Image (cartoon, rainbow, N blue to C red):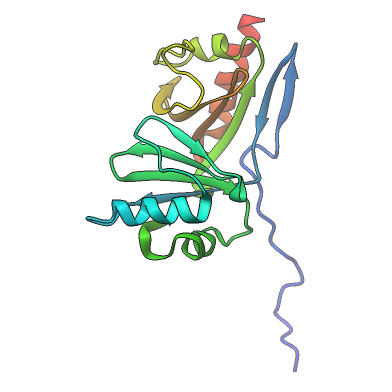
Length: 194
């Protein structure tokens, strides 16, 4: 007997900014929606095992604090967030981020799915650094914050993780709950430097 109360509707995940993608005179601001984020904590005395698992599976090295490294496997980026703590961002896996991480790294780390906690925005273009410097409390000059660096900071009083990517591009992560305010701060800063 078919259950008469089973819904015929499917729930579909929605990104915080509905996949927003804008261009301003050679500058882009784009929400990145196809990435999972997992936090990795290193077990006590397990740094060598985690490093070995990352090297074997991802052909990458774990970064030091303040830097990130990339891998061609799942387009992964490992972020050195704190001593023995990393974030890894990789191509979206559906709702299987933890399963993917455990299948790749086994018990070499403790994993927490962070995917739904963050909004991810990429900003790029020749004036992107200038736009971010207006709202960011750290020095983003290329000699101080070159490609491959990552840090936590504040942008307009909102907690942010910022990654420096090639060719004047930056990846910004902030709390999903304040995504609209975060986007507004970025857009206004871009508009003020054009």
